[in-house]
Length: 215
Image (cartoon, rainbow, N blue to C red; front, side):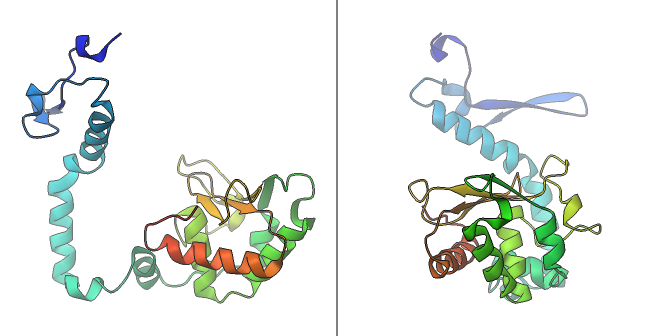
């Protein structure tokens, strides 16, 4: 059915203490019907409101209190990953525990840690200092924190245990490693040389802090 006949407009309904109110997702949203043409804009407006707009007042008050303790100009020199490391400190990362509780899928499903690319991956990571290891962990899992019980109890966004996973993909799929933080998974292309893996992995980790992905 055509969306024009469904009767949806650019508004959302909120209920606070039993009182319902209509919130316009865009200026004069009550007068704008959702159509096939503007459906992407409607979805984007809904997401912005659900994830940001409805909590704007609370977040602003939280930030004002935070900036009373640490002035905002002192924070602008850090990206979000550096700020996490600054506040929480560098984690103690045990490489053997990390490797022991890593799963392999895709192109690495059969050979697992014995695949040449996986061997190179762990050799490269083992040579990282603690900060780069923490940044790799942030890149793949979304946080630099290591569970108190070790990598065996690493959780995904749904609260279930989701072990660190190295997923093999072809170079035609992607040139740089990419992450899926919901699943604690890194897509690692089938590089032909260790040096190429080392270069591309470091670039991917570094670019993650800018908020941009590389394909």
